Image 1: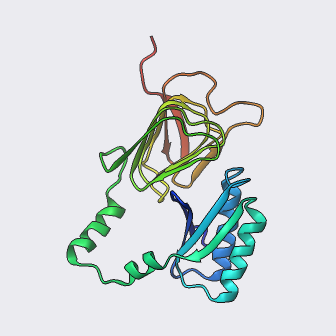
Image 2: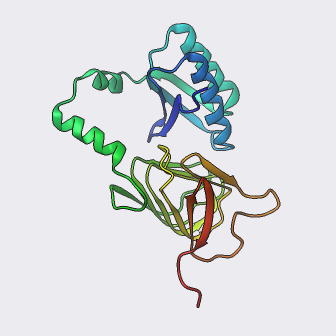
Length: 227
Protein backbone atom coordinates (compact mmCIF):
# COMPACT_ATOMS: atom_id res chain seq x y z
CA UNK A 1 0.00 0.00 0.00
CA UNK A 2 1.25 3.46 -0.94
CA UNK A 3 0.65 5.64 2.14
CA UNK A 4 1.86 8.70 0.21
CA UNK A 5 -0.80 8.38 -2.49
CA UNK A 6 -2.55 11.42 -0.95
CA UNK A 7 -1.09 14.71 0.29
CA UNK A 8 -2.98 17.46 2.12
CA UNK A 9 -2.19 21.14 1.47
CA UNK A 10 -3.93 23.83 3.47
CA UNK A 11 -5.03 26.93 1.54
CA UNK A 12 -6.58 30.28 2.42
CA UNK A 13 -9.95 29.07 1.15
CA UNK A 14 -9.88 25.50 2.46
CA UNK A 15 -8.04 22.30 1.61
CA UNK A 16 -6.36 20.92 -1.52
CA UNK A 17 -5.90 17.15 -1.84
CA UNK A 18 -3.06 16.08 -4.15
CA UNK A 19 -3.56 12.61 -5.60
CA UNK A 20 -0.52 10.67 -6.81
CA UNK A 21 -0.78 10.27 -10.56
CA UNK A 22 0.10 6.56 -10.79
CA UNK A 23 -1.63 5.43 -7.58
CA UNK A 24 -4.45 2.90 -7.64
CA UNK A 25 -7.81 4.01 -6.30
CA UNK A 26 -7.64 1.57 -3.35
CA UNK A 27 -4.29 3.11 -2.34
CA UNK A 28 -5.81 6.58 -2.57
CA UNK A 29 -8.72 5.58 -0.33
CA UNK A 30 -6.44 3.97 2.28
CA UNK A 31 -3.98 6.86 2.19
CA UNK A 32 -6.82 9.37 2.61
CA UNK A 33 -8.06 7.51 5.69
CA UNK A 34 -4.55 7.52 7.18
CA UNK A 35 -4.16 11.27 6.55
CA UNK A 36 -7.54 12.02 8.14
CA UNK A 37 -6.74 9.91 11.21
CA UNK A 38 -3.27 11.46 11.62
CA UNK A 39 -4.80 14.95 11.54
CA UNK A 40 -6.67 14.06 14.74
CA UNK A 41 -9.19 16.69 15.79
CA UNK A 42 -8.00 19.30 13.28
CA UNK A 43 -10.91 18.81 10.87
CA UNK A 44 -13.69 18.40 13.42
CA UNK A 45 -16.19 21.24 13.29
CA UNK A 46 -14.37 23.00 10.43
CA UNK A 47 -16.05 24.18 7.23
CA UNK A 48 -13.92 23.23 4.23
CA UNK A 49 -14.03 23.92 0.51
CA UNK A 50 -12.05 21.00 -0.89
CA UNK A 51 -10.29 20.77 -4.24
CA UNK A 52 -8.33 17.83 -5.63
CA UNK A 53 -5.71 17.55 -8.33
CA UNK A 54 -3.25 15.07 -9.78
CA UNK A 55 -4.84 11.74 -10.62
CA UNK A 56 -8.03 11.89 -12.68
CA UNK A 57 -11.17 10.57 -10.96
CA UNK A 58 -14.25 9.20 -12.63
CA UNK A 59 -17.69 10.15 -11.33
CA UNK A 60 -17.97 7.10 -9.07
CA UNK A 61 -14.48 7.57 -7.56
CA UNK A 62 -15.12 11.26 -6.98
CA UNK A 63 -18.41 10.49 -5.20
CA UNK A 64 -16.74 7.85 -3.00
CA UNK A 65 -13.93 10.22 -1.88
CA UNK A 66 -16.44 13.01 -1.22
CA UNK A 67 -18.56 10.72 0.97
CA UNK A 68 -15.45 9.42 2.76
CA UNK A 69 -14.39 12.96 3.65
CA UNK A 70 -17.86 13.84 4.95
CA UNK A 71 -18.10 10.68 7.03
CA UNK A 72 -14.59 10.37 8.48
CA UNK A 73 -13.22 13.92 8.81
CA UNK A 74 -15.91 15.36 11.08
CA UNK A 75 -15.79 18.56 8.99
CA UNK A 76 -18.55 20.22 7.01
CA UNK A 77 -17.49 19.75 3.39
CA UNK A 78 -18.85 22.79 1.54
CA UNK A 79 -17.67 21.61 -1.89
CA UNK A 80 -15.52 18.93 -3.51
CA UNK A 81 -14.23 19.97 -6.95
CA UNK A 82 -11.34 19.27 -9.28
CA UNK A 83 -8.68 21.99 -9.30
CA UNK A 84 -8.77 22.68 -13.02
CA UNK A 85 -6.27 25.53 -12.84
CA UNK A 86 -3.53 23.37 -11.31
CA UNK A 87 -4.22 20.42 -13.62
CA UNK A 88 -4.06 22.66 -16.68
CA UNK A 89 -0.71 24.03 -15.56
CA UNK A 90 0.59 20.51 -14.98
CA UNK A 91 -0.21 19.62 -18.59
CA UNK A 92 1.94 22.46 -19.89
CA UNK A 93 5.41 21.30 -20.93
CA UNK A 94 7.98 23.08 -18.74
CA UNK A 95 10.95 24.98 -20.14
CA UNK A 96 14.52 23.93 -19.35
CA UNK A 97 14.65 26.60 -16.61
CA UNK A 98 11.43 25.29 -15.06
CA UNK A 99 12.74 21.72 -15.19
CA UNK A 100 15.90 22.82 -13.36
CA UNK A 101 13.77 24.57 -10.72
CA UNK A 102 11.70 21.40 -10.29
CA UNK A 103 14.87 19.37 -9.78
CA UNK A 104 16.13 21.87 -7.20
CA UNK A 105 12.79 21.65 -5.39
CA UNK A 106 13.33 17.99 -4.59
CA UNK A 107 17.06 18.18 -3.87
CA UNK A 108 17.35 21.56 -2.14
CA UNK A 109 16.81 20.68 1.48
CA UNK A 110 19.34 18.56 3.27
CA UNK A 111 19.94 18.71 6.99
CA UNK A 112 19.77 22.28 8.25
CA UNK A 113 21.15 23.99 5.15
CA UNK A 114 19.69 27.35 4.16
CA UNK A 115 16.70 27.44 1.85
CA UNK A 116 13.42 29.18 1.10
CA UNK A 117 11.84 30.13 4.43
CA UNK A 118 8.39 31.30 5.51
CA UNK A 119 8.04 33.48 8.61
CA UNK A 120 4.69 33.31 10.38
CA UNK A 121 4.16 36.00 13.00
CA UNK A 122 1.68 35.37 15.78
CA UNK A 123 0.13 32.49 17.67
CA UNK A 124 -0.99 29.44 15.68
CA UNK A 125 -4.28 28.62 17.35
CA UNK A 126 -6.26 25.40 17.72
CA UNK A 127 -7.80 24.37 14.39
CA UNK A 128 -5.25 26.25 12.27
CA UNK A 129 -3.00 24.51 9.71
CA UNK A 130 0.21 26.23 8.59
CA UNK A 131 2.06 24.43 5.79
CA UNK A 132 4.98 25.46 3.58
CA UNK A 133 7.19 23.96 0.88
CA UNK A 134 10.47 24.99 2.54
CA UNK A 135 11.62 25.99 6.03
CA UNK A 136 9.06 27.41 8.48
CA UNK A 137 9.74 29.85 11.34
CA UNK A 138 6.90 30.69 13.73
CA UNK A 139 7.38 33.90 15.70
CA UNK A 140 4.98 32.94 18.46
CA UNK A 141 3.37 29.95 20.14
CA UNK A 142 1.77 26.88 18.56
CA UNK A 143 -1.26 25.95 20.66
CA UNK A 144 -2.65 22.44 21.21
CA UNK A 145 -4.93 21.51 18.32
CA UNK A 146 -2.87 23.49 15.78
CA UNK A 147 -0.88 21.79 13.00
CA UNK A 148 2.34 23.10 11.40
CA UNK A 149 4.05 21.30 8.51
CA UNK A 150 7.05 21.99 6.26
CA UNK A 151 9.20 20.10 3.77
CA UNK A 152 12.25 21.65 5.42
CA UNK A 153 13.08 22.58 9.01
CA UNK A 154 10.70 24.07 11.57
CA UNK A 155 11.70 26.60 14.24
CA UNK A 156 9.22 27.95 16.80
CA UNK A 157 10.21 31.07 18.74
CA UNK A 158 7.79 30.23 21.52
CA UNK A 159 5.93 27.24 23.00
CA UNK A 160 5.29 24.35 20.63
CA UNK A 161 2.33 22.36 21.97
CA UNK A 162 0.48 21.33 18.79
CA UNK A 163 1.23 18.86 16.00
CA UNK A 164 4.47 19.43 14.06
CA UNK A 165 5.78 17.68 10.93
CA UNK A 166 9.18 18.67 9.52
CA UNK A 167 10.61 17.07 6.40
CA UNK A 168 7.08 16.29 5.21
CA UNK A 169 8.39 15.21 1.80
CA UNK A 170 10.35 12.40 3.46
CA UNK A 171 13.46 14.38 4.48
CA UNK A 172 14.72 12.75 7.69
CA UNK A 173 17.59 15.25 7.87
CA UNK A 174 15.19 18.06 8.81
CA UNK A 175 15.05 19.36 12.38
CA UNK A 176 12.48 20.84 14.77
CA UNK A 177 13.56 23.46 17.31
CA UNK A 178 11.53 25.44 19.83
CA UNK A 179 11.99 27.55 22.95
CA UNK A 180 9.51 25.20 24.63
CA UNK A 181 9.17 21.80 22.93
CA UNK A 182 5.96 20.15 24.19
CA UNK A 183 4.14 18.91 21.04
CA UNK A 184 1.20 16.55 21.15
CA UNK A 185 2.73 14.87 18.09
CA UNK A 186 6.18 15.32 16.56
CA UNK A 187 7.14 13.94 13.16
CA UNK A 188 10.28 14.22 11.04
CA UNK A 189 10.05 12.50 7.65
CA UNK A 190 8.16 9.30 8.41
CA UNK A 191 9.47 9.03 11.99
CA UNK A 192 6.70 9.91 14.42
CA UNK A 193 6.29 10.16 18.17
CA UNK A 194 3.34 11.17 20.34
CA UNK A 195 3.21 12.60 23.83
CA UNK A 196 2.04 10.24 26.58
CA UNK A 197 -1.67 10.56 27.40
CA UNK A 198 -0.92 11.63 30.96
CA UNK A 199 1.59 14.34 30.08
CA UNK A 200 1.36 17.69 28.33
CA UNK A 201 4.02 16.92 25.76
CA UNK A 202 7.34 15.32 24.96
CA UNK A 203 9.26 17.70 27.20
CA UNK A 204 8.15 18.89 30.61
CA UNK A 205 10.57 21.80 31.04
CA UNK A 206 10.32 25.05 29.10
CA UNK A 207 13.86 24.96 27.78
CA UNK A 208 15.14 25.44 24.22
CA UNK A 209 15.31 21.99 22.59
CA UNK A 210 16.11 20.46 19.23
CA UNK A 211 14.57 17.32 17.72
CA UNK A 212 16.31 15.32 14.99
CA UNK A 213 16.47 11.81 13.53
CA UNK A 214 19.48 9.52 13.73
CA UNK A 215 19.42 5.88 12.57
CA UNK A 216 15.62 6.04 12.25
CA UNK A 217 15.21 7.11 15.88
CA UNK A 218 14.01 10.50 17.05
CA UNK A 219 16.17 12.35 19.59
CA UNK A 220 15.53 15.56 21.56
CA UNK A 221 18.31 17.59 23.18
CA UNK A 222 19.02 21.09 24.40
CA UNK A 223 20.51 23.42 21.81
CA UNK A 224 21.60 26.18 24.22
CA UNK A 225 24.05 25.70 27.11
CA UNK A 226 22.53 25.39 30.56
CA UNK A 227 23.19 28.37 32.81
